[in-house]
Image 1 (cartoon, rainbow, N blue to C red):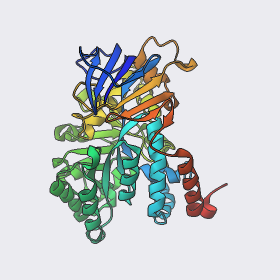
Image 2: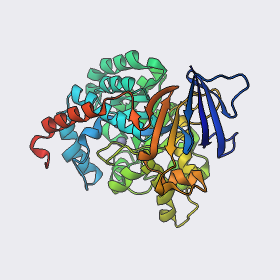
Image 3: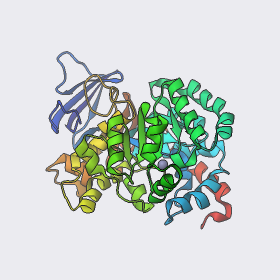
Length: 432
Ligand SMILES: [Zn+2]
């Protein structure tokens, strides 16, 4: 099918094109054919009106725990280790496969509603999340979870390999990565097993690194080096890696990340909410490191709204450094699009509106009181737009949301199922 998206204000995120242009986008099947003018002789089977819309590449959420939406608003106002040890890990022990499936669908609908067409996930019962993602129609890099000691991993390894064999490459939209949880939750031997999994399957590594001060201090006590140095010495960075958080870094850590081509994933809401500090994003950008952007899970956020993350990424570093130029509106948008695609190894496929890439395209309705007048559409997106302003989402040429209606998920039914799951899981822990 040939599609034309007509007369939009296009922010392509392609450095070869003007930063903002008014024009049309031609799509043939899955692929973008042109941006700006329609090629002579191209006939459209379908024309989508983009009048009063900003047209952007699909947003990329590079660090998420999708089905943690089930634990939304359950444990708040706590530090990382109290939150994990006393609240999150004990309740996760009780979660079932069907609860992970239902909440993954709810999370996927929320992602689509905030214009996300690709995300990276790390959790357990991942085949259930894969099923939900397949139905939702978005792209995902699903992390095969590694946590614990060698004996625990040894038992789980056949299931993790099965996850890879069954789902990697499915529909051209789903890939499986190795996801060692963090340096502090794996024994050195177990960490090596996660690295070997990446090597054997030629996949990427998704890991949490240097999220909190306590974690970094304990790593020094235990291993006499920072978490980043520890992972480098373990050989982890010999594989393409995207590392969530990267908050508590020193200058040597930044050099190691740069030298090894590691992509940090900035999660501003989660870092602010858990009181973990400010990731050195301005220093990374200055050094030519390309940080991606993510929401983290909905229990430390408490939503999967990437427009909030773009906004925060663009403003918090201005305050923390005293420099209003620290992260620009455009750089925040790069983090949510093309840098995210690079981090996930998808920059040949998506991350910008570029002829030859797949059609992952969203539209933001500008006919809103809080967005007028436009003046600078990049500033409109980074400082003013809300997830609820997204009215159209396309992934690989498929329309997932149109006129604000999600086509691929029955949201009412999913909300009903998740509220039943929540009541069953939480029992008396729920305050309603
Ligand atoms: Zn996380």
